[in-house]
Image (cartoon, rainbow, N blue to C red; front, side, top):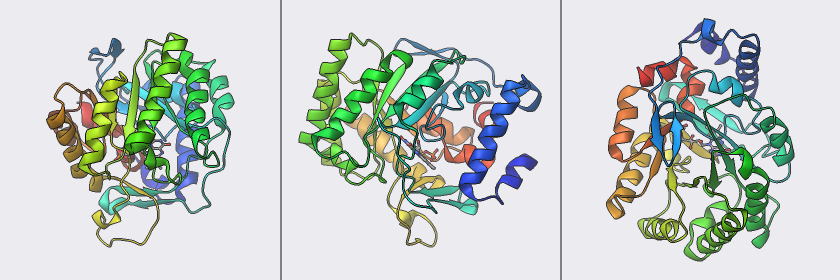
Length: 325
Ligand SMILES: Cc1cc2nc3c(=O)[nH]c(=O)nc-3n(C[C@H](O)[C@H](O)[C@H](O)COP(=O)(O)O)c2cc1C
């Protein structure tokens, strides 16, 4: 781990996040990325008619507003997913809302889709220099209720589809009340059907992914798989964070979603379960990858591509080479 990553550990989590990404952006703008970071080799992976530089991406949530994707792309990720963005800007939950557990390789967060809204993201997307695969992860505003939540996804999809190489429908954040109810059959059918109709109207041909929770029971997952097929969604992203904090040593009494090492086994088990239902389904695997063995195990479980978040926060950009070399 670099000295800078060690220093960042002593800063409050959101300050560290801002300092790290702003520094990365500065290094990128000065054209010094190659001086500070070793880029992995390009592998050229074809998946869903997109050309990925390798199979490792940065997961949604790190660059919620698309402020840093040009800089992140220069580090050698195979793809970048930005968001979750909602139609309107919103502040998210009150602080503290990120808790790091360095010795366990874990984070609990209850950010609650803090983001600057889709108009801000569009301004950033219009300045795109990054030439790799860029996914945009979309969500609903906390204050939208009932069918308005579905409209929020549609609004984001309509406004952002032309900038994205793929779109992710995120129904799995545990920090927006009742968002995970979209895993229920009728709610999900209405959402996927509405998005599919919009896709046909817009003539959108690029992939759409659905990001799911690791905490749902098998029956709901069976329905998710059949609806994803019925409405021609292209892949599942498995998984978001878990609400099961008993996976941490002291089972802390904290609201929010747990990510990192304690999530690894649980998210892999879900990938294997989905593959056992439908071996053909495409999966992007995320949850607890810290090294090459974890990465390969995620692929062996059935993921075609993988993403990281927590290991990038805890170990810094050097983790990319640790995983890919
Ligand atoms: C601080 C934090 C914020 C996150 N924000 C989002 C988000 O906005 N949208 C999303 O789909 N996932 C979000 N995630 C979940 C990650 O994308 C990922 O699915 C999860 O952390 C598991 O991967 P990991 O173990 O490599 O961190 C967030 C995770 C963390 C730790």
